[in-house]
Image 1 (cartoon, rainbow, N blue to C red):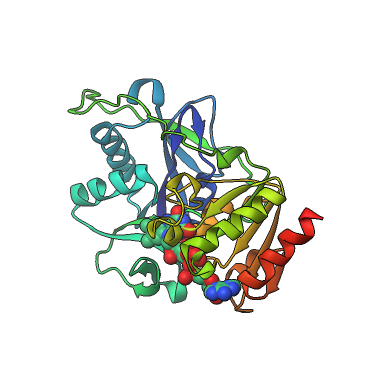
Image 2: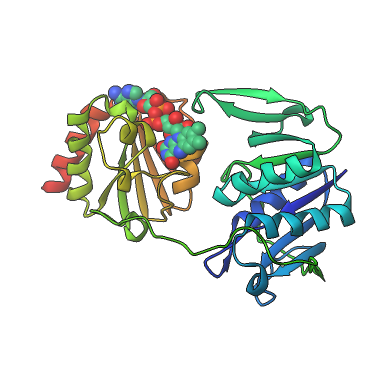
Length: 305
Ligand code: FAD
């Protein structure tokens, strides 16, 4: 079984999710090759064939050109699986590749039970298991779902890819940073986040008070933001901010993969949850089993002393 892993290069840097693709291929038991439109000066640690197209020529993103590069590598490798990360890059490029190859696609894979693909559905409230029918399948994996084991190793065997006609119908203009409104969570050393478990909008202020007492910032899970209880600039997760504070306090947050993907690099995680089996407990350094609206005000009062 062979997997072709599509690595990603963004804003002058190879992304760490490259190693999540490798972890996924390892769990799949697939021999892997990799494709990167990136810089020859910034190659991934990888023991295998790397098809490299120079970013200076192909740009960091261009759907026509990048599709051609991937299809060229597919022709050379004849893989069973073509695997992208479910990022803005992957979710745009993967279906173009699947359509060009006329093969099926399985999106947002979070697990591999019994050799099948587990994907989330109903806004990640449910999971279902999928077995593709086509011999070859395009896959996107959820960032954060497949953690690399240990330090990445190896030096790739590089083969430069140069598709004949680099002129495409679209042009990559550049990135536009999201407007920074009231907070830059990416720089915060302490983040105290409110989840749906806080119950109502007014209670988010109780969490904000603890954040303030600890000298940190308020974070939030997506349901809290979707409900209008906190601005989007406070959202942590795949569709929010990726943070790496020294301390992350998760208040009434279950620990969905999409949330964990945004905060799993925190040095120390404290979770407050009334459910002792909440998935956040699997990654938390300390799980406090308590009602968040009883525990947090008491802790804030202690901090203020
Ligand atoms: P829930 O999952 O409802 O968990 C609430 C928790 O609070 C439970 O564990 C419960 O036991 C606990 N609780 C309830 N009452 C109390 C109480 N009184 N005291 C203590 N604990 C209590 N989510 C994000 O957070 N960020 C993202 O960027 C993000 N992006 C997504 C992107 C996509 C494409 C999709 C499909 C989903 C995304 N999600 C994201 C949503 C994600 O899948 C989860 O639905 C979400 O993270 C759940 O938020 P939550 O933990 O606050 O709520």
